[in-house]
Image 1 (spheres, rainbow, N blue to C red):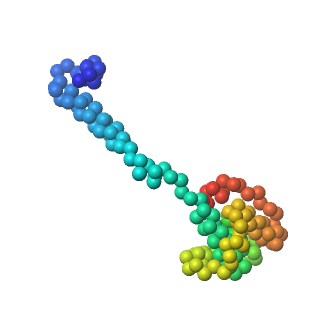
Image 2: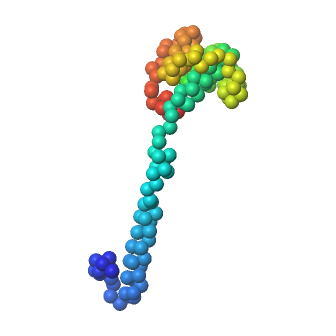
Image 3: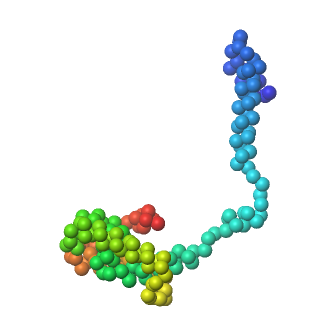
Length: 169
């Protein structure tokens, strides 16, 4: 009723007071219900599960497996995939760099993605995880390989923006 009292100057004389007061009280009730919806009871078991940080080891292993699978791809497919995927270079520019048709690059990238997925999901990686020591080395080695492809084809090194890596993840 205090809400109705505070809003008394907005009441228009000659209108239905009960309906006007009811609308104010109903809106107050609905606002309280919305607020209560976000308040819950604290459960220690649920909090422990929800607030626990996930293990970082899985991502590191997945990244090393991806690098191992990438190294098993045929060189033309690997070059095309790294230039387009990691390098962020368009299909047209990649075709110009390697000296083949745009359709060939699209085909190589598509076949490389399918082969990479098959290697990762099929579990048929030939090399050992120990061959790729840490997560940082994997990222560095991918970009080193990208720079070696650029150098091999006579291109200047392109400065890398770290935000591209964050957007890709």
